[in-house]
Length: 172
Image (tube, rainbow, N blue to C red):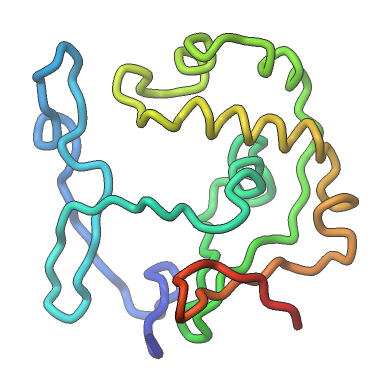
């Protein structure tokens, strides 16, 4: 684990070229075009790329989703929440403006949410609408996360438990 950092933190220039878009990554069966590969893994020792799925989405998914939906601070920048050097995931602290109309969004049907909050409604994963609803509910319950989620202005840290593989909170 030591010595690995995200590409955007390296001082060396990395030229990463990957063509997994448009017709090169599109299946036309089933009525709607759909991506052939939606996740990618890298074997850093061999340098091989392979299709991958990630069933474990990590801790505090509604909080992390709220940052994305609300366009939180630095939303255009790469968000690197995992530090490989220490093996910990770091969330926040951050804030966002209260989302106007969150109650109206939560009153909509699943199909309405799918059609209006997805860029690819015909091929979304089955959990998409549920994830959006949970995130919107979180935003509704925490309109000011600096007060209710990060009252001490400290990040939330997590580490994988070696025995169970589950994310566990870490306090400093």
